[in-house]
Amino acid sequence: MNPLRLTGPEAGVIKYDLLTALSVAGLNGSPTLQTSLMRLIAAVTSRYNWRADELSVGQRDLARMWSVNERTVKREIKRLTDAQLLICTRGGVRGRVAAYRLNYAQIARLSEPCWPLVGPDYDARMKERYRSQTPVKVVQLADYAKPEASEAAQGGPSTWQRAMVNLSRENADQFKAWFSQLEYVAFEGGVLELRTPSKFAQRYIETHLLRPLVAAVEAELGPVTRIEFRA
Image (cartoon, rainbow, N blue to C red; front, side):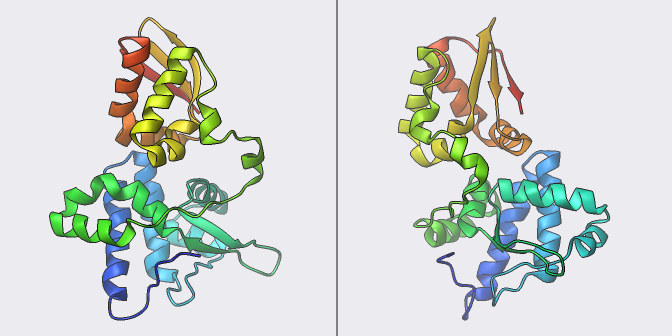
């Protein structure tokens, strides 16, 4: 359950802050992230049931709202659930629409680098509100074959492993959420090749986490001229 309750006199402020977080994260992200978050904001502002903490809209209705086809809606919902921004609380079956819930803590994690851009008051308010929250773990079939964060640094040469260990020590939550998903492919001529689990993860790391990644890698493997990602 999300510990944040959107009821009471502060509910309006919390909702606006949440939508602001999604907005600035999109504006400072890749074109793909911008589109995904714009679509999510449209669905949330028009159809989110805050009292029930639920988004339940048919694919046909979303396709009309987003001016896309239903296949694109399916891909977009998958992208948002893979990123854990939306959590599926009820699967869709014939005659029944699927239901989703916003993962407030994951939205906070995604948008936190952008909070100061809004203003010091917003930054302080968001840190106070979300400091004790952690994203809801979404168990998917792929998770059973996915190594835990402590095991993720075992692939690749020892220099890569040490770089990952250093990143984990610097920020354990950040490492578990993003860097632990990286798979070492090759490093030659200053070009580091990495595999990411999704385009979303790739874009986020490129946009927000490239500097600490390069610093950790250069400390162990040597100068990096370019990082090439494979999704």
